[in-house]
Length: 395
Image (cartoon, rainbow, N blue to C red; front, side):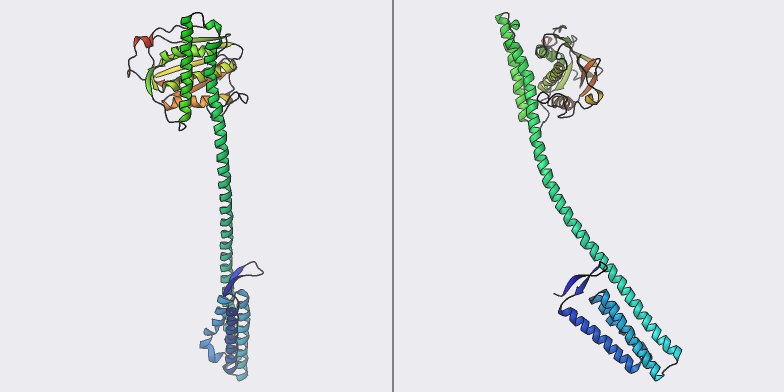
């Protein structure tokens, strides 16, 4: 081993020679100091004043190779050699007392000053080396923490994926429950079947509800949630077609009112998403009015915007609840009933079509959902059948 990190009592560490190289360095420095001392004894300080700078080489060598303790030991030995030279000058009376004292003081002070400078330099170097080692240790700890956090993050993402899948399954079940409620409403209520023609009409409506269930499956398979196929359609006519489905969601004590003016309201978006948005909002209104109440669906035009207004007289929502109604997975319904994704899907579908969704709710007045969509203008011309009269009715 040529070198190693050695700790000192002050906490510093210095790269010092170890083994035979260290022993050789000690022997060389010792021999140099002894040679200098013998030279001073033989010739004195004054005779070797021009060599005193070279006599500092062992001190520098000790600081470079052996560390701080060796610097001070070598400095002490060098001062001893200088004292030997001063004694030789006094013995030979080569100069007066003042000159001999000057010859002694200058090299001794120079030796001590160099030793002090070397000591501080080595201390700074040790401090920098220790700091570098500490930083390496901190970096290793950070890397370990990062790896641990990455593992925890991977576990968390996996957990969130599983939770999202569960939430998604619950949301799909919620949508299907709305559609099945429509199907059951037409298939189990004997009052809806008064003639073969009425039965055929009911079967057609059941088929429409089943097809909307198929559309839900199609959207489930498209997990990327890319925008649906946008078409221009007459929103009033679609709402008129949905009216029986909406009415079947509510019990017999709930009034369902429609206010659909006899003029076209053209919008452009995925028609199936528009229908599912209306059914989602109607389903929430039904849950807010378990006993009885009134649900009103209206449409109007404000400038270049078509506004669909859906109002219920249910228990309403507190401001902190209505502010979060469009957050995914946020729900105030009991577990197993609500999933909190229905209104999030409504918000996404409408905003993808360039529209907005607003909520107005209070405990006294119930809740109003405003769907605002761009007016598609005259991109398509509806046939008379699509804008036929749509009288208001109640149930």
